[in-house]
View 1 (cartoon, one colour):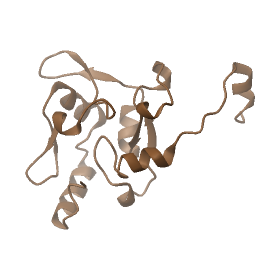
View 2 (tube, rainbow, N blue to C red):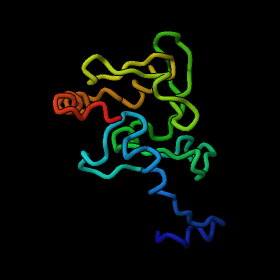
View 3 (cartoon, one colour):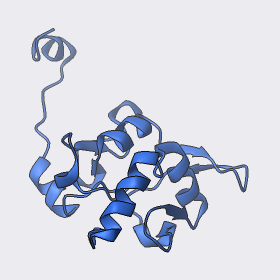
View 4 (spheres, rainbow, N blue to C red):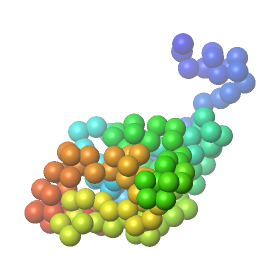
Length: 149
C-alpha cells in the first residue's frame, strides 16, 4: 500500500527522522558494535531503542545509529536472559548508559566483552562478536583503525 492512505485511515502521519543528527551524534559508528559506517557495504539504520511496537517514540533520545547486523538481531527486543544470573535484563540503551560501563575490548580489540549483565545480554542478543566483525576488527587493528574512537 502506498504510504499515506493506510496511515490516513489509521489516523497516523509520517514522521521524518533526524537521520543526520543521529549519525553525527554517533560519530558515524554503530552504537552497539562500534562498526564504522564508512567501512560498511550497506547503509546504517536509525534504530528505535525502545521499538515503536513497544510504545517507543521518534524522539532523538530513543534513536540510535545501528549497522544492519545489529539492527536485524535486535529487531524489537529490549531485554534478554543473562546466562550468568539467569535473570531477564535490559539490553544496552545508548542514550541512557555509557558503553564503557557495560563493555570492554579484548587486548587486540577484536572481541567485545560484557562487563555487566546488560553488556553480556546485548553481546549475545545482537551477536556483537559475529565472525565477520571479529575478522574486520582484527584487520582494522593492524592498520591502526580499531578501536574507532
